[in-house]
Length: 187
Image 1 (cartoon, helix red, strand yellow):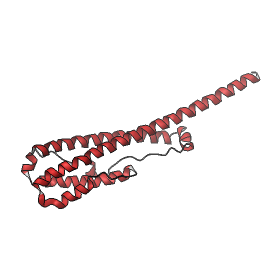
Image 2: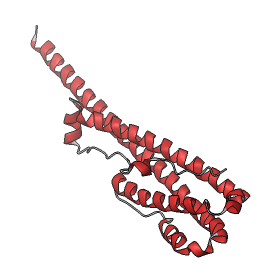
Image 3: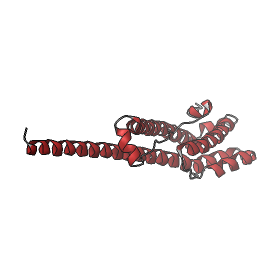
Image 4: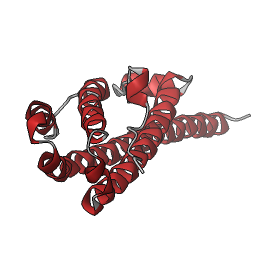
């Protein structure tokens, strides 16, 4: 082998290593963007859920004026609070779900409310939104899993460390009761 052939082989190897590093970096960026997009989907669904609350509170309020303390608590929670992490958002949503469950328990005491068309439509919307939140949460957690796997796997972890890609947090609800979709079928 001549000296020029060795130089070309070395240049080709360097080119392969650079192409590999670029490919890994682009994969990390892509997974991070998928994860951020998925988190945005969760936030949209949670906002829909919170925006439904004024209508639900208004409908229930007409039937349960004397339950005003519960309604005030729920109204206070209905404004989406900003949380920095999925864990903090999960904690806020647990409190919200607990209050929402309290309203639904109160509904049991008012058969006329359960039969009200507006309330039934709100129940259907809430059930739909809860299903969409679950779907968005699964998509987000799948995106987090894929990103974290790439960050933790060799040799992509070398590029991840060099460019400060950090593992993401899953969006989970701690309490088993909060993992359940609120029961909204009173028919």
